[in-house]
Length: 449
View 1 (tube, rainbow, N blue to C red):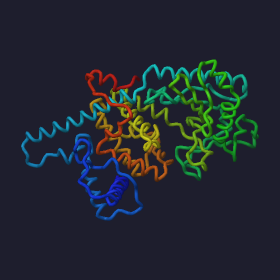
View 2: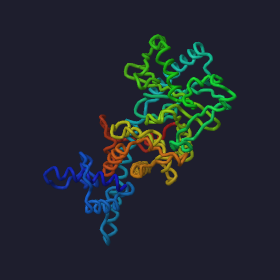
View 3: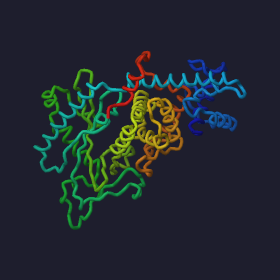
View 4: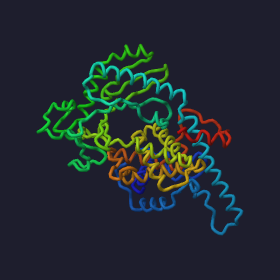
């Protein structure tokens, strides 16, 4: 974590030299902090060798788990009586319990979505899916499609804060003898996690033999051309106001560039975004038309790994009634509520938990605070390296679409929270005192599977 920590220390140094000297800053709890959460600004100046040396010493003593989170305040001196050590251990235990309670309170009052709200959102998506399916069958009967289906975190009980988005998967039917999948790492672009879909046998089956030949660009099936085809249907051909009036919803296509997204208001204060996601299956490979962030790669299809990632995570929790899903949902809510962490995706956070699950076997409810801190530090480590390998395919770097500036800012924000991870849980709502019994704590901590 040296590079990200260097950025943090550099910001602290820049602030120090631009302001009058003052006593050492203390956290709200009165403890000396490893990092100052409110560092501002940045500088292009390089750190001196002395600052790097001091930073390295700080990193060597950085807490490694919740029990050591305040090591400089609570580490007992050598050769002290055992009574003193017992008092220190008691204080550490209280600190662990404090974060544990705050995480469960945050989960209950901020993260978890009411069952009724989830049901209403799902029903709205089902109604609109049915209308779209009927329209396509009547108006475009020659378009070769398999049955559309709804997918996403809302259906996996992994959506957080509010039920506000869902995916409608639209599977294309491709002739297996006319199309092949070329992995991204085998192309000149060398981008694992993406694929080209190549048109085959044009000498025997000329252009026009497949319905989807109209979406071929340069010999490859273009996800952008496919998306444009559906955009004409979704945004241009369907009378959504009339359908909305029939269903008692307000439905409108989202403004460009999100042209394949529907905005649905199904209650006065509740809105749902439905993303249309064309998909192709070639052999065992499932691809989706979710574009790469860089425009020069818009001919690449993205490898669909979310269903397998989610299935593995849920299977692990089902085996031992663990808190992996709870930890993931807390991390997702933190990122959703903090604009500085908005570039982190659900897939990246899921893979951080999956990697941590390979290292730690105990995921019982009473270690949630430890695992939460480990996930934060693991995420910082991956950001420092600039590489987060997929737990399902180590060739895929899930950080490949982040810019260096985004990586630095994400790492700085997370690193600055290590001294007081509770700051990540602060929102506009007031955290009420935790008075629930252990039985209630266990009940809310594990989502229904």
